[in-house]
Image 1: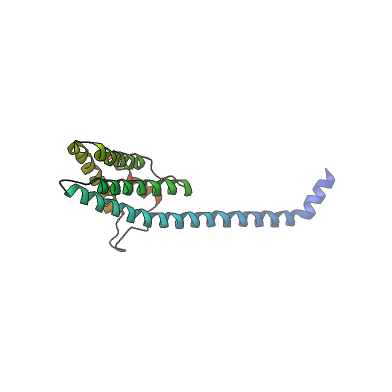
Image 2: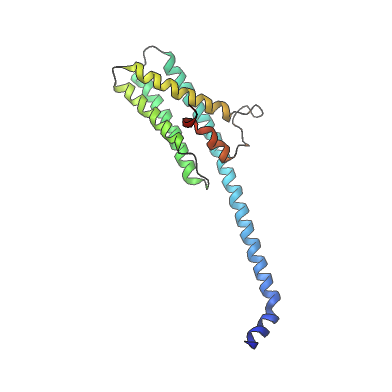
Length: 170
C-alpha cells in the first residue's frame, strides 16, 4: 500500500495531464458531432423544404383539374414518396428523431393517390387529398423564412417536429 501511495504521489501530475487530455479530446469529439449533426439537419431541411414545395404544387395542380390522368396521379404519388424517403433518411442519419406522425400522413397521401388511379369514385379521395394539401401548405408556410426567402435555417429539430406534427392539429 505504501508503494502505491508513493507511486501515486510521484505520478499524480502525469495522471492529471492524461485525464485533462482525455477530457479535452472527448469534449472536442462531442462538439464536432453536434456541429456535424446540425449541418446534416440544415441540409435535410433545405432538401425537405423544396420537396415539400414541389409536392404542394403538384397537389394543387391535380386538385384544380376536373379530370386527372393516371400519369399525373403517378407523378403525385412519386412526390409523396420523395417526401417519405427524405424523412426516413433524415430520421436514420440524424441523432435526433424526426416526428413519426408525418410519415403516416405521407403514406396516407400516397395511398389516396394510388386509390384514385384504381378507383372509379374520385370525389371522396379528392376530399382526402384536399385535407392533406392543407396540412402540406401549413408545413410549407411554417418552414418559410422571410429573411432567406425559403426555409428557416434557424429551426431546431424540435421546432421542425412541432411543425410537421400536423396530424394532431387538424
